[in-house]
Structure formats: structure tokens, C-alpha cells
Image 1 (cartoon, rainbow, N blue to C red):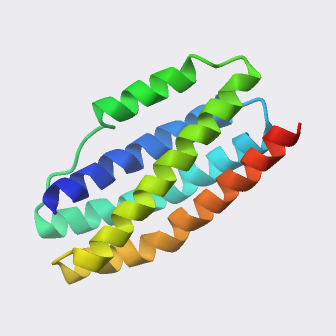
Image 2 (tube, rainbow, N blue to C red):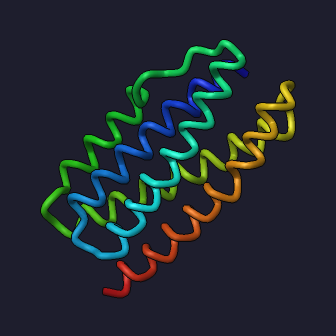
Image 3 (cartoon, rainbow, N blue to C red):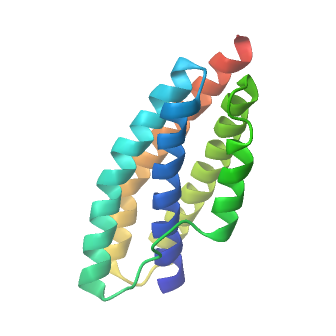
Length: 143
């Protein structure tokens, strides 16, 4: 499960970077807004993850994974066009679905009660993000 915790930390950092990118580069207002929410919420969650990792003596990833970096680079290549909005939303949908699956797996099979509690606490935040992302996707598709 330590690998799962490290992956969660890398994902947190990737979400913050993605949110900052959306705030700066999106052409759709809802993408900018969702990006700002991701930055705010993932920064808060990151503080909690770091505190728990310190308590459990788990070293966290200092940066997004290579795969996450590659995905971000692909999205960034769309900056300046409406395709950026679509690419960003698609990436964030996938990321949040994967994160929810990871959270669900941790709460179902994790061995550490504190980690399970942290996962349970993070789940509604991540689920709300996915809801916001999907609503924004619908708005972008209509425009």
C-alpha cells in the first residue's frame, strides 16, 4: 500500500498543476473555474496527505509521475485553442475516475485505519470534482 500512497501524492501534485494550467490557459469560463477549485481543494488535501505520510514515515513522490507529466504535456500542446478545454476535461475525467477507484480500493482493502479514514474523507471532494468536470464538459460540448 505504500506504493498506492506515493501514487496518490503524485496525483495530488498533478491535479494542482492541471488546475493552475486551466486557470491560465483555458478559453472556457467553466474550465477556469473548475481549475481553480482543483487547485484550492488539492492543496488542502495535499497538506493532509503530507501530514499523514510524515506520521507514518512514508516518503511521498516529490513530483507527478512520468505518465502524468506526459499527459500534461499533451494537454499543454493544445494551449491557445478550444481543443485545450476538451483535452483538459477529458484528462481530468479520467484522472478523477481513477482516483475514485484508488480511494475505493484503499477503503475496502487497506490495512491502516488512518489511511482508510483519510481516503474516506477525500472521497467526497474527488467525487464533487468529477461532478463539476462532467457538468463543465456538457457546457463546453453545447457551445
